[in-house]
Each structure stands twice: as structure tokens, then as C-alpha cells.
Length: 520
Image (spheres, helix red, strand yellow):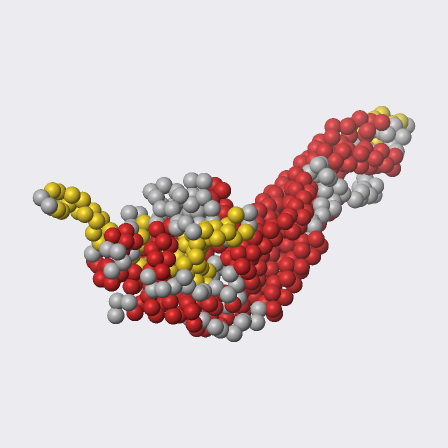
């Protein structure tokens, strides 16, 4: 019975032979989606018509358009990472690829060596290899094991006929190049073993990376390594440290804790927690110390591990069949759509805030234009009234007053609405009540003019001028609001198109995985 788990698992890795899944339709949909997105972004250049090029909103629009250009120009080069991962997948196209995933010192190399030894002892072939300059190089060496980071390159081992383990530098490696290498080849795997040490299992930093893999709908099995401890014992009369397996209760506690915290984290990240398999605790060192005997296979947790791996085979095969489409989908989601959402959307939101602020200040600007113009005219009005008093030339007064008002109004609009390029609006000639004229004071019976007054004329002009300025500036402000409204419409179009693009890609992803979701 003890041998059954590994034997059943080996048989399952040898026996898989499923018809290929038709993914051409899905690939075509994704290529069409990408092309449409590029066309939309080309057509969605925001324009700042009605604003001066030096205005803050126009400058923000220019920055946003330049960012769109950089996205479009950069998209082609980003496909290199997709091709790099695909090259590994193509080399092992007829095999199941499992990525050993976790931060350094999680026991990845040790677990790979133990699994390789288990296959070897069951008369299965074991072939080590590593990646160098993008090529697969065969090796006779087992993986190095140590307390410090020993893996500086992507390495792997082929177990039996159809199983590949890829041992990678840790994603949270102290060496940035190692972490980058791991990330580049995530897409090459059909399933993932997420390893974390029993001393600190399921750290939050690791769960963030785990969430990304689960979003990719890749089957994932958490494995708690080094599930052992040292206790003192007497051997030949001397006290020494003896390595022991953690008991079932201790392992259950850690496995449940990892599963609970991982589930909570995935829910927080809006990832389906049902994709997470139950964690398994193991001790590679205990199995090696016991020379891989049957009882220790059970005690060290490897029978449970092989049973868990057996349940990983079917979802891994399903993923493998659709892997080219998944790889393209991940590229579109993470390299194309996500940067737009992370950078373009905040820029659009900031532009929206600037527009709201500009709208709020327009009414203040209107009051300022009216006030400054009115004060400027009223300060010169007594002189103008005196200038035309002798001839009582009201029409000439109105004409001169109109001209001065128009000039001052134009200057105020230019100074206060400095961000706008507005169409010139005619300022109608100022006219007041027809009966309104200068006040003539006569002398005695000879009716000799003693004086000409203009108090009523002054009062009427000063009062009515404000009303006429209000009507005129209403038209100016309406024109300014129209400029901002045009930009608002453009922003809403881009925002809605991005929402539609995201929903369309989600729709494509759901149909790609429809069969697996139904089986789940």
C-alpha cells in the first residue's frame, strides 16, 4: 500500500494522451482584440482645441498622448518575453512541466532531488538539464542544496517519460537577475508547486506572487517543506540532536493555517480561492536519512504528496492543451492592459480633476471679468460725460463708451481666461433708455443755459453697464465651458473604451477556460 501512491502517480504521468483542444478560435479572438485596442488608442488621441498650448490641461493632454505613443511603440518589443517562455514549452511540448516555485531557502532543489531519487528507485529515467543562452543543456549533476541560495540559473530534471520539474531561482531572490529569470519562465509551466519552509510557511510576500499565478488559472499545490525538528536523544551514552518528523497534529495546524491565510489573501485580491489546493507537509531530509524506506515515505509526508500530485495531473493537462492561448492571454493582460490601467487611468483621473477645478473657477473668472471691466469704465465715466456735455452728444458718448468697454473687456478676458483660445464675440453698441439725456439748467426768462448735469445719466449707465457685461460674459463662459465639455467627452470615451476592452478580454478568458470551470 505504501508503494501505491508513487506507482499510481508514475503510471498517470506515462498514460496521459488526450486530444488537443481547439484554441485557434481563442487565439484569433485575442489577436483581433489586440489589433482593435491599438486602433482605438490611435484614434483616441485627446485634443485640446480651444485651449492654449501652455495651459496645464493642454500640457497634461500632450503628456498623455505621448504616453500612448510609447505604449504602442513598446508593445512589439514586449513579445520577446513571451517567445522566451514559449521556447522552453516547445522543447518539452510532449511532457507535463511543473514549476518549483518559492523564495530561496524554501527547499526547492532538495525536493527536486528527492522526487528524482523516488523515480530512479522505481526504475524510471532521470535526466538533469539546465538552460544556458536560451538552450537546453544536459547535465549529470544533481541540484546543489544548501542553506544559502545555490540556484543561479534555470535548471530542471526530466522524470520518467513525461514529467519535467523546473527548479528556479527564488522569485524573492536576493539576486534581482534570479527573480527576473523565474518570472520570465512562469508561463512555460503547466502547474506549480509553491514551496515554503515549515519555519515560516505561507508568508504574505509569497502570497502576492501566488495570487498572480492563480489569476493565470494554472493548477497550484502548496508544499510545506522541512516539516521536521531536532530533539535531544541519548545515543551510546551521549546526548545528541536527532532529527524527527513533526507529528500529525503539528502538520495539520500549519497546513490549515497556510490554507486559511492563503484563502483570505486570495479573496482580498479577488481571486477564486477554490483554485487553491490543500497544502501538504513534507520532510525531504527525513526521507533521505531513512534511505527512502517505505515507512518513512509515509511518515515524511511523501505518500500524501504523490497523491496530491496525482490530482494535479488532470488540471495540468487541461492547462497544457490551452497553454499557447493562456500565454498570449497573460501577455495581453499583464504586459498590455495592466500598464494602461496602472498608468493611463490615473492620468485620466488627474485630468478629470483638473477639468473639474477649471469648471469651478470659471464662475469666479466671470465675476472677476465683470468687476474689473465695470470698475475700469466707471472710473473714466465722469470724464467722458464732461467731454460730451457741452454738445449733449449722447450718441457719441455711447459710441466712445462702447469702444472703451470692448477694449477693456477684451483685455480682461485675455488676462483672466489665459488658458483659453476663444472665438471673438461682438460687443453690441451700448444703448440706454431713449428719454435718457443730459440735464440742462436754464436761466430766468432768457432761458440761458447756466449748467448741464449728468447725474441721472451716470446712475443709469453705471447700473445698466453691469447687466450688459453680465450678458456678454455669460456667452464667453459658455464658450469656455464648451471647450472643457469637449475634453470631458473625450476622457469619458477613453475610460469607457478601456472598461469595454477589459470586459472583452475577460469574456475571451472565460470562454477559453469554460470546460475546466464546468468540471471544477
